[in-house]
Image 1 (cartoon, one colour):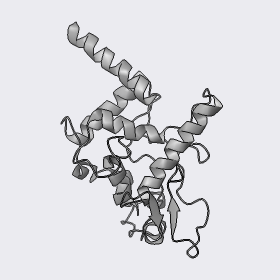
Image 2 (image 1 turned 90 degrees about the vertical axis):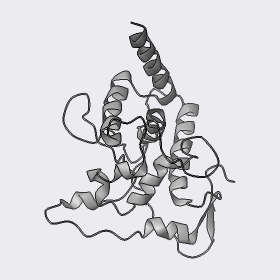
Image 3 (image 1 turned 45 degrees about the horizontal axis):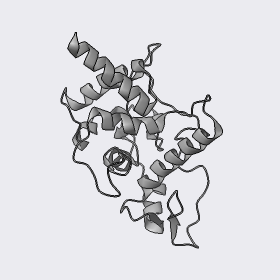
Image 4 (image 1 turned 30 degrees about the vertical axis):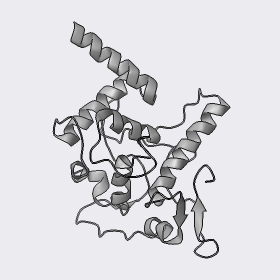
Amino acid sequence: MGAAHSASEEVRELVGKTGFSSDQIEQLHRRFKQLSGDQPTIRKENFNNVPDLELNPIRSKIVRAFFDKRNLRKGPSGLADEISFEDFLTIMAYFQPIDTAMDEEQVQLCRREKLRFLFHMYDSDSDGRITLDEYRNVKYAPRPARAPGAPARDLRGGPRSPVSAPPAGGGGAALWKPAHREGLGPLHRRRGHDGGGQHMRGADGA
């Protein structure tokens, strides 16, 4: 009884922190356990067998984002060696579509958080600026050769959620597929400039 009550309290806390429903948290917990091999934490190598990442040209950037302490809100720089389930939910929350019930202030805050997450994918040295080389490393990442029999859609880049789990209605689609306007859609909706300024500043203008 006490253990069940403690578990439900923990789920309620995670609902409040991440915005996921209790059902979504349960689904993501099952996926977390699959990835971790039923261990309490996940390490980078646990992402090696995620099909949606295998042929993604920016695979290393996406995996790195899960361990970036800035995204985990655990520091201004550096990478974590491993992440807990709560850390996992923190990162997955960036992929959620914006809730239509939010007021304008909440919407702007959510958009800024998503933008900051994308910025961190480019800013690999955590100095608060994106150099031209860092931009090119993501924009022009070489696309891996398609494996025989692999569908062409597996080659598309962009930071959609790399972790699949069955939605509440069943099926095997990715849990989060945000709309381009409000979620983390393709990184490169506009053609960048290869000349001119040498860096882009952070989401807060720093």
